[in-house]
Length: 394
Ligand SMILES: Nc1ncnc2c1ncn2[C@@H]1O[C@H](COP(=O)(O)OP(=O)(O)OP(=O)(O)O)[C@@H](O)[C@H]1O
Ligand SMILES: O=C(O)[C@H](O)COP(=O)(O)O
Image (tube, rainbow, N blue to C red; front, side, top):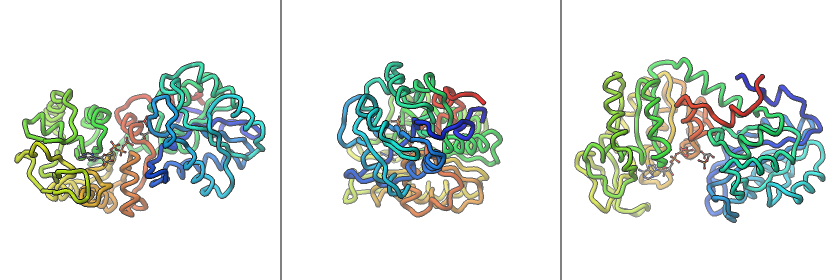
């Protein structure tokens, strides 16, 4: 990487503003997957062992510039303290005099977690005034939030214009692993895309068709393709502005001789709950108007598993179905198991895909679990990540 890392600068005795991505899944205030917090430990320990005073800033959810009680970083700070095996201080603000007073109390090697930066409207607008406020707290900016590197926000990009700015160890590792895998991919290279953020993800398929040999589609993403092909999809997820784009991808795959696969059968349900009625149908049968597609079916699972088994590189982003609910988890589990068992190199991207592999006990068998969902997709699209671009060159 041509950007400076935390190893290239003097940190001892300095106040270091570290942007992390502690946007972890929460259920009733409890963290259900702490992968993203664990992934930042090397950078935090590197800094504390060298005697820096560490400020940790992160977003959580999308509170849209308001204080939302359920989106505080309190649980994340508690979990971090357990993982580090030492006390971690926490403030209810991310800027201002109370934060400065807390920083003044820090000793070398101490850690202070700031409040959710998205409680300020200026964060997502990349407001230069907010960026300056963040910068005024510290001597050095370290960006370790790979998961948010595709966002040009005040605490990821703006702040880098006001302080010496370097990458953290997690950021460095993510860029290194993804860069190496994608620059000169081992083939066959299979990309699997699923999940529910249809708007965010559908455009990524364009570049995946350029770089991958097989592109497998699952999750909520598939239904825009089905509808565009004229099949009934009932209440399933849909982006109705993307029909031409979707059909264009099918054409593009044909022209390039790429293997573009959509589910052939799906699990449908009349409700979003474990007690709902479910059915397995072939896609051409169409989904009744008050039902929705919720997982890939058994034929699709077998077809996808076969492709994955024969791949040398697999990049998977986004679950195949609503894996949080047991009856709709089989597609995601099958794809996860196929990734765990293939001899190819496997990269898992996306908070929920990582959570799914963890839940099914498959995480250990993957080669790299990326902390970036959207960020790893944008990286694969070949886009520059603003949170990385803004860092100091070597
Ligand atoms: N057919 C479907 N209908 C509705 N929701 C679905 C469907 N398939 C999967 N999902 C939901 O998609 C969600 C995950 O989607 P998402 O796009 O956020 O993936 P991700 O791996 O977390 O990536 P990122 O980190 O970019 O958010 C899960 O909560 C899952 O229940
Ligand atoms: O979960 C993610 O992908 C990152 O934390 C970024 O979150 P965002 O999509 O709300 O910017």
